[in-house]
Length: 82
Image (cartoon, rainbow, N blue to C red):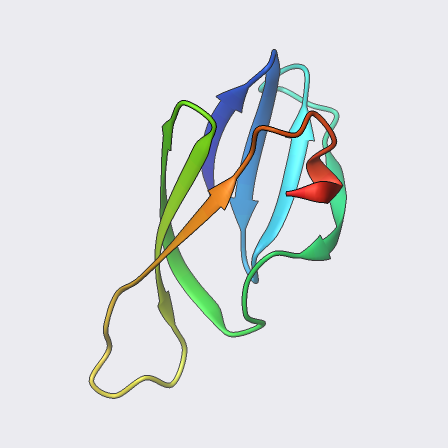
């Protein structure tokens, strides 16, 4: 899992593309209503620049394994709208 902080919330991006959030790094954590990435997402890294979240990730089954990059607009305060 990788974490980032936005608007006083901590977010964790886990497999397979589920995002969790909490007001504290110690929890409690709530999960998003959906997966933001393919069900076969494996490793990931997160980078926030302003209102953009960049996610570098790999996919189970790719041969040779390659890195993918996704860009998400996280400007909306409603994280289910990202």
